[in-house]
Amino acid sequence: MEQNAETKRYPHLQAALKVEDGSYINMRTWADKSGQLKGTVERNDPATGERNKADVEFKAYGEGDKAALVGYIKEGEKTTKVTLQKVAPEGKEPFVAMSVAEKGPGDEKYTYLKGRGGIVRENEDLAVMPNAKTSQLVSETLNVSRDALKPREPAQERATAEPEKSKPARSHKKATQIKGMER
Image (cartoon, rainbow, N blue to C red; front, side, top):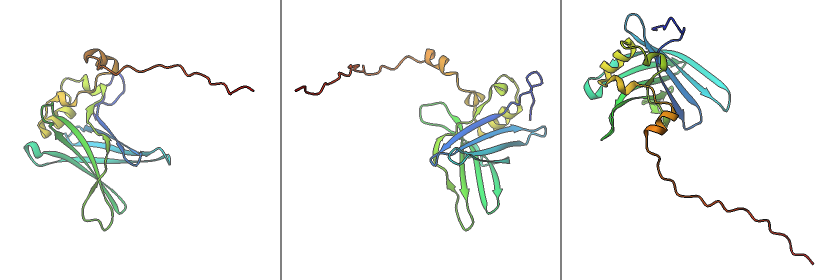
């Protein structure tokens, strides 16, 4: 992992996925000194407090728009597949997304986990490095620009950059207290 000596932080790409069952899957990945893309995947279940963390190595599969970086995690009889791939919505800028699938004993196919999030972005330490090996490797493999990996702007900056959407006016009626009938 490329280490930023001044801050003692580790630059990496990251993604988070909130799964429909309420658990979270967090992924961090970096290029080691040999240029191999490595990372960690952690699944947190807030209902039980359980946390499972595993190391993963990503390998490139496919070419062009079908290119993907895929890593497998074997835990007993269960295999988890983590895929990083380019997503290019019509009329919008392409980005890199993480998907996670699981396959248990006796299963023939992987079952993809449904949820929200999964967009792969640079953390702040990686974003300030002009020739970051990690971003360069992912950009070249998945055929996306480095801008597709840039971190989101802080909410305050986004609010000033985007015109405010008009919201319907809310009625602020005061609640009136109704007294019971007096005899």
